[in-house]
Image 1 (spheres, helix red, strand yellow):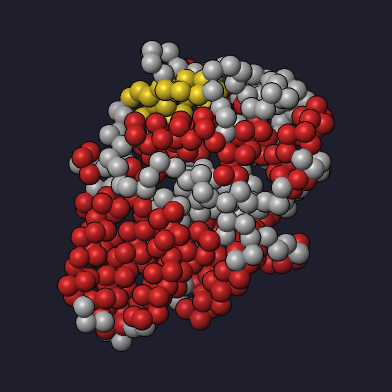
Image 2: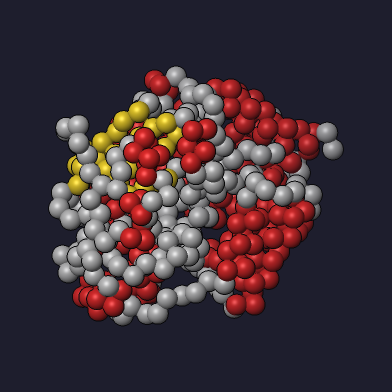
Length: 442
């Protein structure tokens, strides 16, 4: 599940997970945004050895709900992936690139389906239809089925209960067709990875899509390492937790340490802070609770940093001083974490928006120029377009309207991929212009 991020400083411009759209832009504008063929250069994350083995165990033997799993499962033999439904024009290219990475980086025997039958089926459907089945999820994966109709018939039965799966034979991924190309790609990465491997997300991981903080849009090298271990020849479906733990030192090094238990109140608080339910005061209170719990636990990892980030984001619109302090606190922690550059880039976007609102155009330009190369390497088109639009406003207000106009034009291909139809792109441009106008209007 990909939780929504509302960028308070940008008046609900979303850079991490663009909100759902009811229409899609011209397919010709959706295919190919020039990121290249993959993100194999993204850092591994973690510290290897025992930490990596512990991460594998915690990801593999639990579900996002916290439900404990006792049996290891995976696909055995070659895997094929097919698409059905209202397939968006951008999906074949993005799925092909993803399958290529899973084959080369994770060593998985996986290929596009060339027949009507596929091991894993990706079905595209109307977002409203999918939300009736999974209200809190942008997209989701189900075992033991190959279509939405089959899932409807079996919903609630043991046949589609991940906890009862001992060997994976079929799975279906359900993704809204009526959303932005980037959200479709992000769903492909996260849900295909979970169809193949871990079913859990861990907030402590700084460099992984197996984390509901949504900072990472595509599978990282850490994720590929976890998936490579999942399909190591030393493991097999049906193994117990203890059997897998005994074999991990020969696969990942170190030892499989005991599970790390994250206090339920912290998870509940951080998800309440990020969710749609409740007013801003309730969400701020939830973020403050999450921060307090993280500090009481003595954490110095991604969970503490993300708690600071959540507090900052919710205060950005009404108390910029407090927000900047919390953004700084988060950035200081992320700077010491493997793969923390993309989190800092998100923070720099927030800082740049606040600088723009305060009339500090030079500061906004410096922050944007620092963040853009990192965001480009992490393939986040929505965030890249947002940064470019902030820079264009800063250039406009610094007396260079020609450069601003050229940059707005250059941002369009990224914005259409990241946000979807032109109407949404124009709304984002207006939101950022409103932020810039705050300085002009005092």
